Amino acid sequence: MLTDTLQSLKLKRNQEKGRRDDGESHPDVAARCDITSDEQLILALESARDAFSRWSAFPMEKRLQLATRFHQEVLKRKQEFIDVLIEEGHPRKLAEWEVSGVLQSTDSASVALWRKLLLEECQIGSRDLKLMRKADGVVTLSPPQNAAASNSVGGLACLVAGNALVMKAPRSCSYGVMYVWREIVAPILEDMGAPPGTLNLVCGMSSKIIGRWMDSPLVDDIFFFGGSERGIQIGCEAVQRGKKPILELAGNDTCVIWHDADLDCAAEALTECFFGSGQICMVPKCAVIHPAIADRLIEKLLALVRAC
Image 1: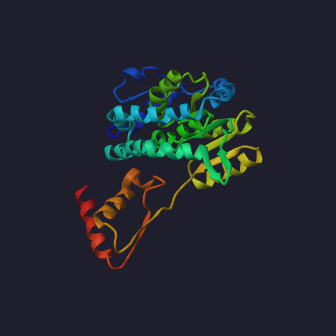
Image 2: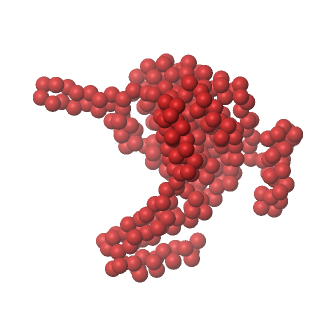
Image 3: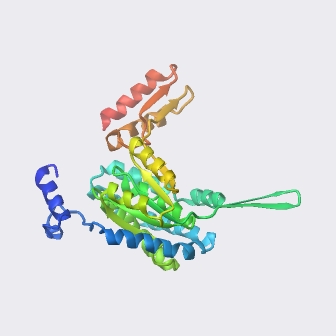
C-alpha cells in the first residue's frame, strides 16, 4: 500500500467490480470478501426471522455459554487475532489493545453482568420478584470502519440476549469482522445447536444496506456505530419506522486526573489518544489535570511520547 498506493486501490476496486479474480495470487491481498447481492440481503433477514423464535427459546444459561466459549477461543487464538488485524492494516499496539478489550468485555465478570441484566431476582417480604428481559427479534449491526472487528463483538450480547443477528462487515475492512464471526462465533453456535439463521453476515455499501434494513418489516433493531450527524439521522428514521436504534457515535472523551492519581498510569492512559490516529471514539481527546501535579504529569507524558 505504501509503495504503490494507486495500484493497490485500483486492484481492490477492480476486484470489487468483478473485473479481476486473481486476488489469491496477488502478494498485497490479505483476504477477500464477496459483496452481498440484493437477494442475499433479503435472504439474510428472512433467515434471521425464521431462527429468532427457536434461538430465543434456548435457556438463558445456555446462551450465556456462547460468551464464555467465545472468550476461551479468543484467548486461545489471541496472537492469530492480532495478526489478522495487523494484516488488515492496524498498527501492532492498536491491534493488541483491541484484542485485550475484546477479552475484557467477555470475561467472567462481564458475563455475570449480562446474566444480571437479563434476569434480576429479589425478595420483598414474602414475595419473590423477577425482572426478566426478553429479546427484541432481529438485530442488524453496522460496526465502525476504524475498529470494525473489535466493535462488532458488541453483537455477541445481542445473541446472548436471544436475538437473531445480521452483521454487516464494512466493505473497506471486512477481513477482521469475517474472521471473528465466521472463524470463531459461527462454529460455536453450530456446536451449540443454534438454528441456521441465528447469525448472518453481509458486506457491501453501508448506505444501501442500512436503507434495506430501514425498509424491511423483518428488522426490529438497528445497531449503528459511526459519526454523530449520520447516526442521529439513522436514529430518527428508525424511530419513525417503529424500529429501535442503538447508537454508538463520536466521542469527545475527557480524562480527569486529580492530585492523588497514579501519575505513571495516568500518563500511560493519555498516550492512548494517539491510537488510530486519534479517530477512535473512546480514546482521550483532552484532559483536566489538577494544578498541583500538572507539570509532573506533562513531563511523564512527554517522556513516553519521545520513547515511542
